[in-house]
Length: 163
Image (cartoon, rainbow, N blue to C red):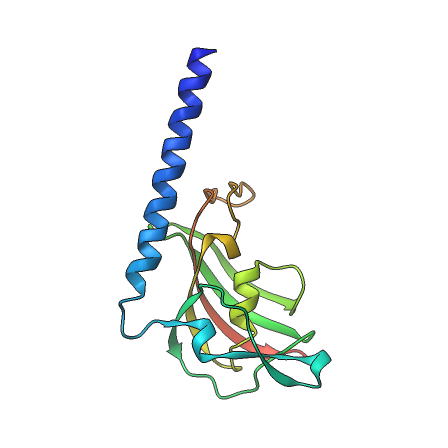
């Protein structure tokens, strides 16, 4: 029993250290002159509201524009195609590829929130806090595993809005 207790305490300590390191990483980004808070500059378009702009929630997502887009901004409910690469704050790459999905369905909340604000053709680097990613639990369905409390960093390019 005591060995299991010691092991559990060590895991908790590692988890706390990882969380603190991720939170410090996000705080450090706020001092950058070319990284912006998503909620302060952009809004989302909601199809159910007749295609009108709505202010999004204050989320804590930060982003950097790598390439300006000049196309339409997708409406929630539309299907989009994106190219992306994902990393942890320590530069560990956990995913890369292309995907097509309907806005408002089946993707990480923070990832969706970023794409909802991007014009077609844009490429952004997004810094998503853990609570809009995989939260306070380990995500073990990718290689490598994504620890609890991980900031997710995505390089996202919005390729097109599907017709």
